[in-house]
Length: 230
Image 1 (cartoon, rainbow, N blue to C red):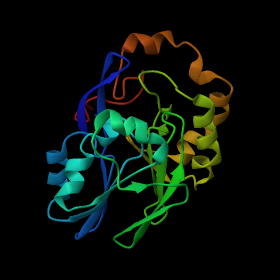
Image 2 (tube, rainbow, N blue to C red; image 1 turned 135 degrees about the horizontal axis):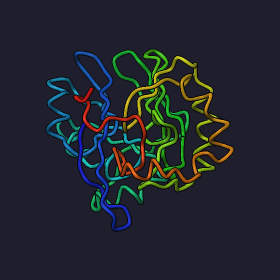
Image 3 (tube, rainbow, N blue to C red; image 1 turned 180 degrees about the vertical axis):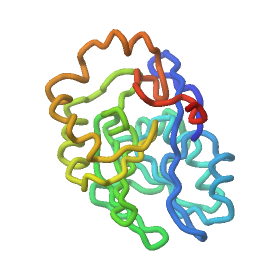
């Protein structure tokens, strides 16, 4: 996990990001190299980085992408619809690979399948690994439900369509590994989908507003800021 501050429309938000490393003793793919390249590469160790995959072009998903990738001359992958967001962080370079729906990445005898899950960003993607029983959802879906950006849903209808049409088609035991917060399963979240569609996400929650911003600048409940806190 890395942490820092993101400026969204002139407002600073404290953000804690999960960076995921998938691979074996020899090679890895890094998902969402947030901001601390040194810390990420320390976890990678001597293994070869084959690719850095960004589930969104937002600053807290791409901040360390170039530095992490450059160590082993790895490629950086991003959905083309998020290239304008990428340019806000990296003004003089572009990602190496334009990801598309149903694209495939391979590492250490496992396959990562690209699933377009727009909503928080127009080019948001998730990565499903059947062999690991896990889906890396970026900001699309988190332990408390659909993710936000700066406390808002930029395109909630698109996001819910992505969740219902793609993510909730996965087996219920699939682990949801998001860019923020704790682990959960598809089966834990799917029963709440009808409530989300009916408007529960946009109703005013006075109690939540009083708690203040948490890991991704939103009002998340049940997610610990400090994982050492019990």
